[in-house]
Amino acid sequence: MTTTTLSVIGVGYLGAVHAASMAELGHEVIGLDIDAERVAALQAGIPPFHEPGFADILARGLATGRLRFTTDYADLAGAEVHFLGLGTPQRADGFGADLSHLETAVDALAEVLPSRSGAPTLVVGKSTVPAGTARLLRERLAHLDGVQLVWNPEFLREGFAVQDTLDPDRLVYGVHDPEDAAAEQAIEMLDGVYARILEKQPPRLVMGYEAAELVKTSANAFLATKISFINAVSEMCEVTGADVTDVARAVGMDDRIGAKFLRAGVGFGGGCLPKDLRAFIASAEEHGVGEALGFLREVDAINDRRRGRVVELARELLGDLHGRRVTVLGAAFKPDSDDVRDSPALDVATRLRAAGAEVTVTDPEGLENARPRMEELAELEPDLDTALQGAELTVLLTEWSQYRELDPARAAALVTAPRMIDGRNVLDPQHWRAAGWTLRSLGRADALPAPRPAATDQSGASEAVTGEAGAGEAWTGETRTGESRARPEGARASAARPAEPVPALV
Ligand code: UGA
Image (cartoon, rainbow, N blue to C red; front, side):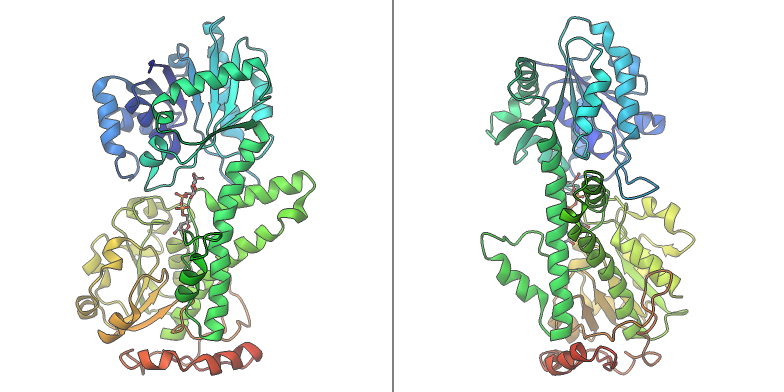
């Protein structure tokens, strides 16, 4: 394998992992970001986020001298290949993707590229972008000789980012014209960079720019749809008395469907799925085919409803939430990450607070990132036992292993009242009920049908489902197991007559 000198512009989650991974493959890498603090941290070997395995490859890259970081575009002038790892957040004025970071970076890069005149230079886009973006960015580089642009979307998952980068399940190369000789040269250069990855023979697919862009947006939109699909089924389970985990397990056994991303619960969040879904909708509308992807609005709405449903369940258990002490397990949008962008857990914590609850949030890694958004709204407590103390209701929203493996008897001794909402369907209901807990889940038979909300407050939480104050007071859960199967009758009645409230059993 030949060593290539390359740059990675934008060392956020994607870019930093990509830069360190490329150094791990043996390349000379310089990572650039306009955030001087982030650059200083990375240069000092301090990972700016929690990602298993990242600290090791960062340290190794720095120690070998193959990896360094800068804020100065001039330092990029000598590189043969430039990766674009910039963020494409949701625009403030709508659903569309904000491409300004990418555009600014490409213009700044174009300023330093002429110093390599004659030598072929490759620019490789990794960011998630709407179809048509690569072609527009290519025009911004068109005045430069020997510069080729390839769109090579990244499919890494947080929590598995290093593994997904070094051992991807496929590589997609988008080029302006797959038949063109210049494109062939660009493909060859990128193959050279990924030579060690290609030794493992992952599928490597070459296509046009727009197809490559659409592969990524469609993949994320499909994953979001799969989650919302099972969460919609979850709503049906709640009114029919079925258990969504039974349904998902059996449905997922069909190879054509598959079991992955069928975990029902409080739904998807993070820096990718929600905003990519919305950008896809906006892009379809801009292209005049908004109707084709209109169903994705419902995918988004189902996801939002699940968050509201947790607040409804809290009201069913506690009645009026004012002054009631609720502990939220989880701040990160998913386990093994400290990323709190569009975190379902923090959104629900905010809604619970808006409904008057005294909220404590705990998370093994996500509290520092949660602080700016949450410190006025909730107590942020890193220690799990301390966070549980005094809780009248505990709500599990991010399935960290320490929460999945929580001992119900020990936890019961810490809380004021053993009431739990399992927002991820990861706790064994029988085990928890046997330990004296009142357990409610999303989409499981034990989660009873809620009366249809008559009004919605500003936080999006239902106002109507208050029931008697302390509706859950009479029950501690120990007798509930046998009863949960006996509920479908009442549940069906409720589905048929939504206006008639069904008493909240727990
Ligand atoms: C997602 C995609 O999975 C990656 O393939 C993609 O590369 C990445 O976005 C990106 O565009 O950069 P990630 O944001 O790390 O990766 O998170 P996921 O593992 O997809 O999880 C997203 C959310 O869905 C989480 O909140 C998770 O809790 C939730 N989820 C996932 C469910 O609610 N149910 C499931 O069955 C699976």
